[in-house]
Amino acid sequence: MISIGMLRDVWSFRDFMISSVKREFQSRWTGTQFGPFWMVAHPLANILIFTVIFAQIMRPSLPNHTSRFAYSIYLCSGVLTWNLFAEMQGRSVNIFVESANLLKKVHFPKLCLPIIVVVSNVINFAVVMSLFMIFMLIIGAFPGWVILSAVPVLLIQLAFTAGLGILLATINVFYRDVNQTLQVVLQFWFWLTPIVYVPTTLPESALRIMNWNPMWLFIRAYHGIFLEKTPPDWSSLIYPSVLAVFLYGLEYSRFTGFRGKLWMSCDGAGIRD
Image 1 (tube, rainbow, N blue to C red):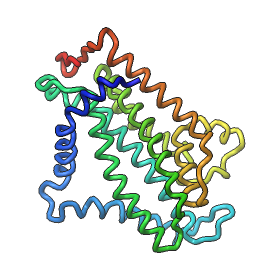
Image 2: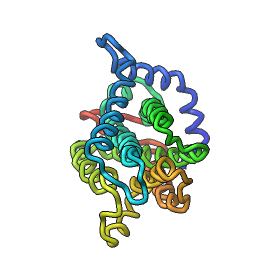
Image 3: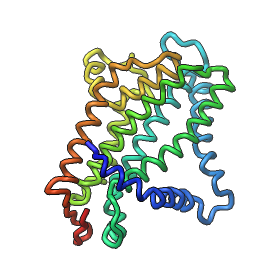
Image 4: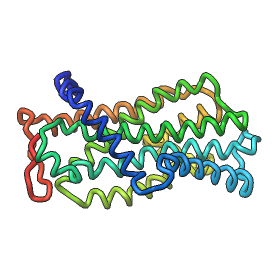
């Protein structure tokens, strides 16, 4: 779907993308006394809250699991996965609108902007997951070699998330209600996905429908890796993989149709690709 020429053009702007990622992280720490410490403090606080409140106080149980930390692992792996998805969507949907002035002044492939979003969020996710891995080592629940199977799952998830984000960002240029609609949809989507609750509480009919929810398929794969310590059912990831390819195909026709010329109306001004 993405041509070699497009990738070559994007690669030629790698310095621009690297500096943009650095600038994005630095902007988060501007004016703070502890700087990058907050990048670690927030996810660490979440992990501690999930562990202390849910594992020690509420004491929920999972079927076939007796460990007092089982639900903490279940919840953390689901919430961290969802946060990566939600943050990328929230950041991606406005990427073209927020960069309208830059796109009008500087000629560069628009594909660079979603890549910047992906890289910055992956770096943040890597920090969070590193803390989660340390937590699992401390409680003696590290999954071992099976952790490597999380890499292809993450790549498929990133492909789907980025594909959806680019599509929404393109539509948001013309219809600004997309951003507000997305926030509402994400709230419903979160609670319609077994992240806080376990799927065994759902009726059989709801479980069949749940298999059409791509985020549940990713989260279920991570649950298997971190909680069950088993590789995911790779066949269950065919659907989100096909969905990601479909999204990129849709975007390819949008971005490169009409001989690659696309006019986008941002704040009343045209932006040419």
